[in-house]
Length: 132
Ligand code: THU
Image (cartoon, rainbow, N blue to C red; front, side, top):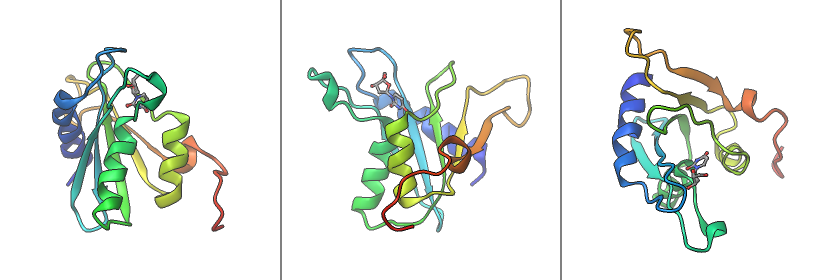
């Protein structure tokens, strides 16, 4: 599974986003070490603070199925770039401090998609953990 394939899965998952309040729809695709993919979307709530982001939805689905090893997560917000929020960065740090984070949008003029790839270590230097 390459980065572009994973990103396209995130883009496709995005159709199921529940974002009636912000209108900002996000899809995520989380790749496990053994090649399985778990998708996630943002799920908003009338009580705004109860909203969960697409990245955490994907992680919660995977963790609750027993997965513990992750290599990459792709995040799509359609035509605009969207990086993980601070809560999601910390959430991911618990399970995958070295995960690769792939963000769009796809640049159609670039045969490889022009996606941005960063490590969580770049986005959350010196994250908090009780285990380290
Ligand atoms: N959102 C995500 O799904 N992921 C992020 O990393 C940033 C924000 C969602 C939450 C909310 O439903 C909407 O985007 C606007 O904040």
